[in-house]
Structure formats: structure tokens, C-alpha cells
Image 1 (cartoon, rainbow, N blue to C red):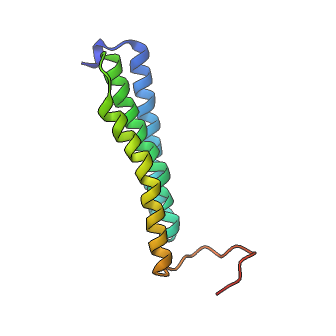
Image 2: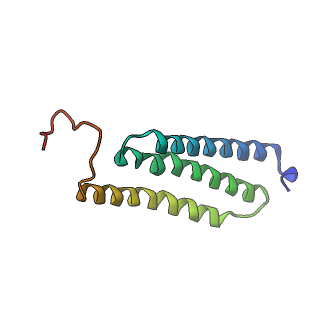
Length: 113
């Protein structure tokens, strides 16, 4: 199947898969290494979202190289890029409401509670 693709398409698809995989790896490492909930919230919403986006763009490139329009992948990518920040914001607001403790020190211009 992929042998029939043009060389430029194969290179672009491989590059997007590598970029997507690298972002997903960084997001997974961030989930393991960050100290508390608020810091860990950044890993899946930033890096992993870009990782999944890279894989979906590679899938769109496969469809485009075969002469099809990758509407499903485009819609999934748009949905992911819209919903990930919204869900992260709601999780952070819920954690603040529940007073989940943070390990990061407060900013210097904020009074301690």
C-alpha cells in the first residue's frame, strides 16, 4: 500500500509520525516526572495533544497522497485541538475549587494564605 506513494509523501508522512511520536514521548515523560497535579496537567494537554495531532496529520497525508480527502482525520484533529484546552481548564478549576495542594511556590507578588 505505501510502496505506491510518491517519495515526497513517504518522507512527509514519516516526518509527521516521528514528530508526533516525539511529542507523545515528551508528554509521557512529563506525566511521570512532574511533581503535582497542576504540573502534570500540562503534559497531556500540550505535548500529547501535539503528538496525536502529528499522527493524525500523517494519516491525512496518506489519504491525500492516495487521492482521497481525509475529512475524518481533519475533524478529529480539530476536535482534539478544541477540546483539550477546555478540558484542561475545567480540570484546573475543579482542582482549585477542591483546594488540591501544589508543590510549586506561589509567585513573589502574591500573599501567602
